[in-house]
Length: 177
Image (cartoon, rainbow, N blue to C red; front, top):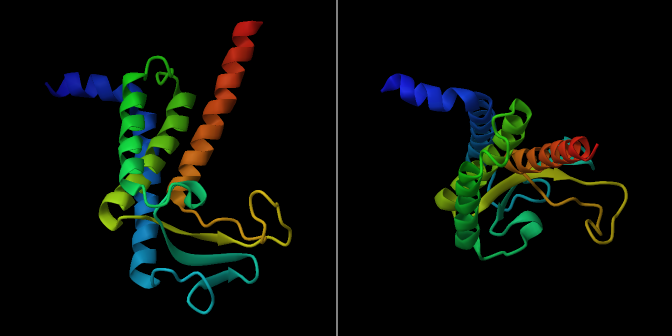
């Protein structure tokens, strides 16, 4: 029995390792934030200045998705996250998860999804804490120069998605030639 389980898991070990690492680092950092900063510690002196006028550690409860979109629909977002995880599992052959590079991309992505989904179930919102202020503005993204706060899980989701897109374009270009 043990070898059957091992034989099913071993080909995806990089996926599981990347998922585990993103999830654990995300949850450890969020636990520290939860225990050490009051919720909504967005402004000094409640936030921690890492680099004055540029990078701060804050404690924000994001009830929505990226940039607070769909705020108030945390339950729906958690269900959507669960559906995405099931889809990744069911489509693992189509997504080419046998390839190590795809395992890395989807490991980052699933670790991030699990991290934020855990927050929604435990806290009722996602804990965001990385806060950057830029000396310039982008009207449609950060009109004040302040980028929306985010967390390690968000980093995993964004980087995993970017890696997946790059790999997909490379595969497509290779198939076209």
